[in-house]
Amino acid sequence: MTSLLNKKNNDLIKWTDKNDSTNWDVEIDVLIVGCGGCGLVAGLAAAQKGAQVFIVEKQKTGGGNTSLGQGMFPAAGSKVQKDAGIDDSPEQMAMDIQAKNLGESDPDMTLHFARETGRLVDWLDQSEEIHLDLVTNFLYPGHSRHRIHAPKTTDGSRLVHQLTQAATRYDNLFIAYGASVRRLIADPLNNTVLGAEIDIQGTGINLARATKTILACNGFAGNKKMVDQYIPEMSDALYFGSEGNTGEGILWGEALGGELVNMQAYQGHGSVAHPHGTLLTWAVISLGGYQVNRQGKRFVNENQGYSEHALDVLAQDGEVAIEIFDQRIFDEVQTYEDFQKCIKMGAVKSFSTMEELAAIFRIDPLELVKTHNAFQAGAGEGKKDSMGRRDVLQPLSPPYYGVQVTGALFHTQGGLNVDKKGQVLTPSGIPVPNLYAGGGTAVGLSGNRISGYLSGNGLLSALTFGLLAGENAAKSVMEKNK
Image (cartoon, rainbow, N blue to C red; front, side, top):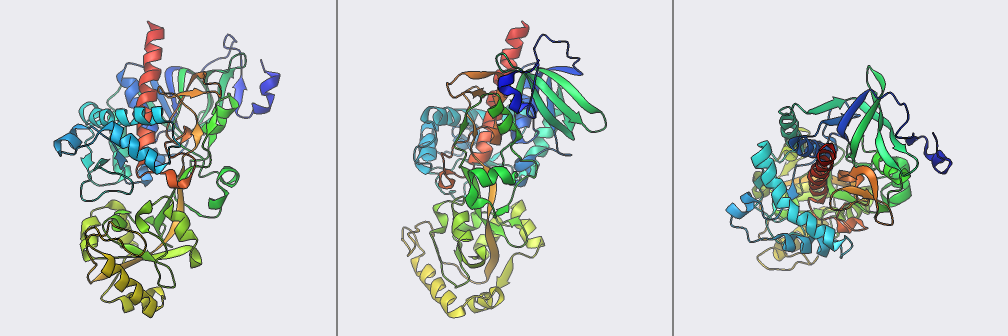
């Protein structure tokens, strides 16, 4: 049965009467599309409540963007934060988020998220045996308190491994890799989602009927056509994210009447080693490093935020900058997995003098020395340098280190509008029946611009939405089953 109104969406949605004679290959309580941080947390949360859960991932392995990052996200009120004596609150965290995005995220939803983050960290620790440490040696841009939580290795792939291991402890949670969803299946009378067509490698097309479906398949940064449409300023920038982030979840939700919000928002990064294509941790800047262009000049307050800094770097000659730091900073970040990759790939170079650094990176030595001396003079407790930066607490000292970096697109922050339960909403605020979304498929907390991204917002949205969508989808199923 096909609806004429939705005929144009037949490549995205299979329209069928819920009472038809479809031969379902599998029937499940909760179907989750995507096996990154959002999908895994959603699966664990739903399985813990007793639902039969099936996670499908189109890639050969799970993880997505969560694996490529540092596994860091902000949370207020966790046990580990309280034990560290940090004076913080969800209200303060929500204020910081909205200060960064100029009030463009929904204030009620932002506070709701902030209130759930401490519970998320404690739940991971107590329920799933996944412990996160608190980063206290520096403040990421925009955060007024130490609230960034991360795996001990500051490696997102480690977090994904721990989540995947936790999933093996549930007999009611199943994961299929190399399983690509072709179309969602829905009733054309009311857009009720009934399940999905899944192309599982080696078995062909499978029809999976699901009581609830959660879209946890990230954003659209890997879809050139969508990037050109919504964020054209990053059309030609380096994409530093999972190749699987091609926006299907957003398109499915839109085809079912879901509202798209803040599609121009995204997270960039202004510190990706070039041409190595490896992330140089932003901790290098936060701990007191700086950047110069090929003319040997600083060009912006580096610590305003690493997302919007991507555009600052891309605006320079050759779309690159040189990041400069010293041995103290090197020692502080050398345990970071990303930094170790930069070292192994030869991106990090050591110098005794600024003149040596200038020669290797082909920078005007006189201009660089002038810039460096000015930076040194502006460093110190409470001082404001020529770029308006106040966070540099001490001058750099030799040996110096340099890394050539570029700006990159990491992931998108716009997506489907959802409620506090993770249900996809239409423009009139009515939930699309049986459909939930999280991670990059759902709208984030960054407002409508690159500068609205606060450090850790991406994984914050992924994991918190995963917890909320998983819990509420399972709760709805279990109540229906009773």
